Length: 186
Ligand code: ITT
Image 1 (tube, rainbow, N blue to C red):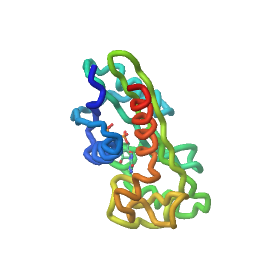
Image 2 (image 1 turned 135 degrees about the horizontal axis):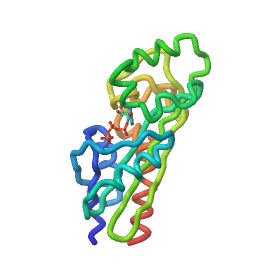
Image 3 (image 1 turned 180 degrees about the vertical axis):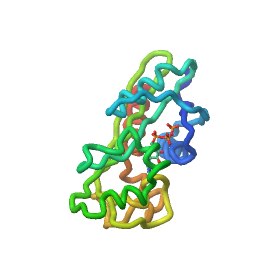
């Protein structure tokens, strides 16, 4: 089975664009399968991605990514409910909820479940940071305007270029692990 072309099942233009750029660094072509994947309720993004992939009846090399924002003080909320929280309370709601909180530590998690004719394997990526006091920047998507990664200079992901975000993001880390693994295997 050809593995230098892989499909990503996602409804998100942003997730796909970020993932495609990372895979391109390794000479791997990522194609988009525009689907609404089946998502189970679980705390762990690995389990969610793996289940979404398991119920997908397609025989090509394919992957699913599950990602989310996990706020430490709120025991990981919104976590697996990240899409729902964005659709309902949005970034303004998160900022309001945390108005008086000094502990603002948070992380993004990504789990990429991959399958081809021979093997199923999952890789994870994480970036730690904190929730800003106000929205900043128009780059990225979702929670990026309120997430400040630890490893940078205090700017939110929303204030960074796509390349800067890709240098340290949860997604880039998980996809790089997959790409390295695929390269070593070929
Ligand atoms: P698919 O399930 O169709 O892939 P989705 O948008 O539902 O797309 P996720 O469940 O993986 O994707 O992500 C949940 C939400 O978390 C998503 O709606 C984003 O808004 C947010 N999110 C994930 N990664 C993010 C990132 O890198 N920057 C900002 N927000 C992100």
